[in-house]
Amino acid sequence: MLGSGVGGYTAAFRAADLGLDVVLVTRDERLGGVCLNVGCIPSKALLHAAKVLTDAQGAAEHGIAFGEPEVDLDALRGWKDGIVERLTGGLAQMAKAREVRVVTGEARVTEEHALDVGGTEVTFDHLIVATGSRPIALPDLPDDERIIDSTGALELADVPERLLVIGGGIIGLEMATVYDALGAAVTVVEMADQLIPGADKDLVKPLQKRIEERYDAIHLSTRVTSVEAGEDGVAVRWERGDAEDGGTFDRVLVAVGRAPNGRGLGLEEIGVEVDERGFVPVDDQLRTKVPHVFAIGDVVGQPMLAHKAAHEGKVAAEVIAGEDVAFDARGIPSVAYTDPEVAWVGLTETQAKAEGRTVEVGLFPWSASGRALSTGSPSGRTKLLVDPASRRVLGAGIVGANAGELIAEPGFALEMGAEAGDLGLTVHAHPTLSETVAFAAEVAEGTITDLPPKRKRRR
Image (tube, rainbow, N blue to C red; front, side, top):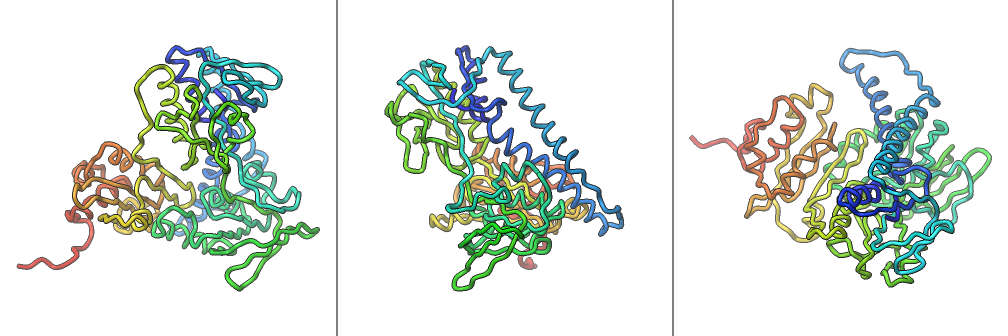
């Protein structure tokens, strides 16, 4: 196993449980890869702290006022790091319990069945490549500690007075959420014509409206043209069409995407295909062109998500163990843990339009949800995409509090081939946010009673 991220350790542990002799090769001292050490987990810890701060501020609208919060950055950083240490320590214990041998060092494939790991040879019958991805760096950036990537942002060295986020995708906006709550004046620059490219615009709209009221500025369809480090800060210029503008910032976060770590491993030398971007093509059993070499996770393509890597890792391990399985997920959920959260799974309206597919949309606004109103989340919405002929659920999108949790139900419906009526006829607890999924299904089926009728009934 080459790589110890979520996909790598999941594959290693599954293979060990199936009776295989497993060696887990990692370049880091701690297992868990990017997600656990400098990604998913520490970012969610900081996002939780940010939510506590903003919820306290918003409570004034409900007649509950708190004093100005005191943020101890050292304590907050220590709490975040403690969560990471607890989880990575647990992985080390599980590896030991499964008798998975862990070898640490930079690795390179030297022969069809051998790796060199820092001067130590490791041989294998089968290899699973799970080397993940890295942040994309903009060209010609100054070498300055005030210019950081997501890893640097999670270190939480300080709270800058002025923060520029280059990239309005999930990673950039999650970090913007944290630093805004901690008191930074945030500006976002995004090349696309919307935030979170890939999500439907109607789902992003409530998020954009909220942060437009909080952030200094959001510039869409805008390209950064220059970055210069000076004594007074980092001067950045950008352009939108023929208009040019810019500003000076205390810190600049570059969050323009991630690149796969497929190159530099020696894979090509044994016949494994690695494309020009660094992705490793695989079949539905995660096998590369070389039959005994498999690849999973970010390195095999989009979406670059830990939960996809974990499921692929299990499939690869089971195939190696002789089981007749394949990776065939109907939907892989994506979640932006912003405030509000944005989540979607399966087909989106944007994709449907691009592909010329006809779909029916069941949309339920949270302004009609008692639970949403009572928790201060009236701007949310739940949407289902339904096949007009079969009535099966094709996709779903949710924006609002806990959208990342709520998306699981329509994801399950998608995987099971359920119809919209199945969701609508499932009795949900009231009042809950989860019942908005059923309400969206009822909108699609024309049975909704929690919204005004579309037209008056004839007598």
